[in-house]
Amino acid sequence: MSYRLPFLFLYLLISSGISLQAQISTNTEIGNTGFSKERLNRYDQFLKGEVKNGRLPGAVSYIVRKGETVHEASYGYRSLTEKSSMEQNDIFHLMSMTKPIVTAAFMMLYEEGHFFLTDPVSKYLPQFKDLKVSTDVNAGIDGPKEPANKEITIHHILTHTAGFSHGLGGTKLDNAIANALYRQPQANIESRVNTLVSLPLIGQPGEQWYYSASPDVLALLIEHFSGMTVADFLQKRIFDPLEMRDTGYNIKKGSQERWVPVHNKNEKGEMVTSAQQLPVEGNTVFGGTHGLFSTAADYMKFCRMMLNKGAWEGKRYLSPKTIDIMTMNQVGDLYEADGQGFGLGFGVTTDVAESKSLGSVGQYYWSGAYSTFFFIDPKEELIAILMTQVQPYNNYYGTIMRQFVYQSLID
Image 1 (cartoon, helix red, strand yellow):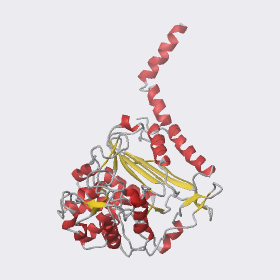
Image 2 (tube, rainbow, N blue to C red; image 1 turned 30 degrees about the vertical axis):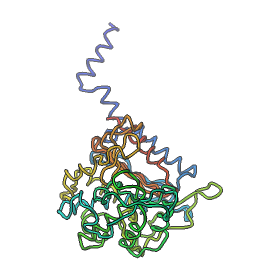
Image 3 (spheres, rainbow, N blue to C red; image 1 turned 180 degrees about the horizontal axis):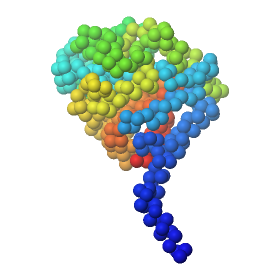
Image 4 (cartoon, rainbow, N blue to C red; image 1 turned 180 degrees about the vertical axis):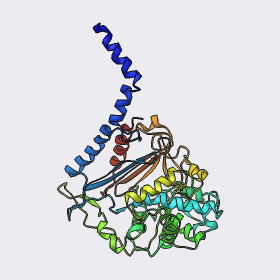
């Protein structure tokens, strides 16, 4: 009779409607998100270890899938000098994570019919006529030049293919551009754009992808088309409707205690609060390249609107078709990262195998110079944000964030 007992047990198990797989899922998943608690704990322990070992001062993580919060945590210190604990609602310099927000704002004006993507920028900003291109970037500003062989278009500006630079390339010309744009005083965004166009381009328009200050041009065009400052336009069209209360070019007096200063390693290799900090108030250059402050929670609202095809909580910000064109590769093979392309304001994954990393085709993302990172995966209905404040920039934390997040996804 004993040989019948296993069959009897199996019969009772099946007839009761329970399966071993269901028991495993119940024990390991976070709600209905498809995330494994045990696997996501690897990410949690990693971030705690980075803080403990002095590689990060502190960090905030925020992950949402299918509309449910998967992970929301803070680690370490807001400021190593003050030993103040990092909180979930602390305020970070977004740096280049400003770019996607300003691009989205600019595309709202596109939807209102103010311009075509193929328009030359000089149609609206005459200073973009007759630009010069360096023929030797290692010779600096005063090196040989030739005339631009075509006009810079709005599409060139949106895709970093205009031939402008951010001053990060390390050439003599890049160094001069960085000095002129960011180390010399600028009164407003028009002043900075006028400085940009007074400098030689690093290449002919449309012939290369080169990370650049082009989003500052978008900011000036927003002012041209809307008749408002960029700060006011963003406040009216994005921040107020999305209830992004802690996002802007300046931090309100009553919120400045939540500001996270940038950190770096000193000569001994110890992580410390940087001696030099960007101002948190009094900023008047409302740029498209950088400049915004925000929290992980505020930025998540922007990301959820994007993931939801331009709508959020009953209000539409952009058309689904506009989101589509923003998040598809617009630059062919010019973007040189394996398996990646570039859309309008976002990097885009085009081939997962070529990328040599976990992810999905159609994932879009960007990061900021003080080590803030995000990605949006429409296929998985997934958003992940990681914010810290460390310089110099290194994409290590953005890359490993994706690795930890995707390995936690089991359904």
